[in-house]
Image 1 (spheres, rainbow, N blue to C red):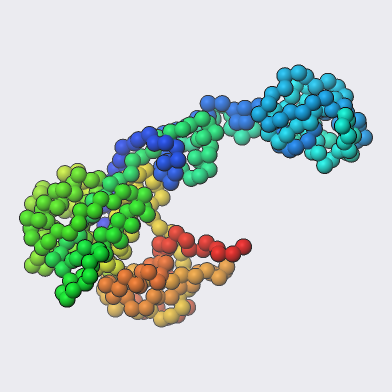
Image 2: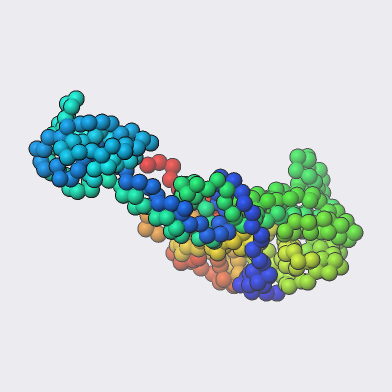
Length: 404
């Protein structure tokens, strides 16, 4: 039985980034850039006005100066005729600064009539003029390979004329549930049977991480069917199997992986919930065998599969954030394994606090639904209320506000 840290190391040592692909720029959102991008031009490409106002030469900028208005420059229009001394042109925000001008005064800072303006105060040189290249200069390295593409990176690439972007591929993850007791989602439960929720939970976790789930359905408790389904799953980049990795008479997953030539790197992790986790490399593909209990399945995915998927997509930040929080209640770990207790984390502006979500059975999916974090409780340790504990946050909406 390996530690959590050793299990992660053995997994990540065997995960490589996937290939790259060029996708339409909006499809690059939340993916990782796979090449460097330099700007082909200055941004902005010309000096332009950052206000609606009047453009003129600074030599005429003294307070009380009167300037004759000789034109109007709209955004998107370029005036090639120079503006003479003693003259000004009305100009819109974003419009190019005409020849002969180097300063802009806002509309509200002049007295104006149809043919001239008078400056109410002295205007500094370069006032409200955005210089060419003041954001990006031609050939600047703007976005480096390995950068996650947020909306602002998408906007910057668009300003550089890009309509496609090179990104790391999304992993396709085959998901296989095992067990004679399972019914397909949409079925009506009958005595001795349960609905297969794990496949959809895992598929949602794969999608949340940025991958593409491929549902293989259910393998019944026979070695031949398990082998056939695992072989089918090897068409994907990753294979995730839930159930059948324990020590029961009908648990065929481990032996099926080995029978197909897989290299088992570990089986069983010193963790609760999620002890019967196995990881193997089979025909060059990572294979995760996760427990069948719903909470154990989802917690195991968070701890071991999600970081691997993120690494394969070129990400370097692959672990959930961890915060120190104050316990609201007494907690006891009677196990000899570290216990990841489902908790509800709050922040009052000064500190994080956390309480458990109640009963912690590994079949109780509601304990995850009601929570937003996992409390780390060391083996055989009791902690009184007021103790400081580490909490791994798994809710992306945590600390988002519902009012101004």
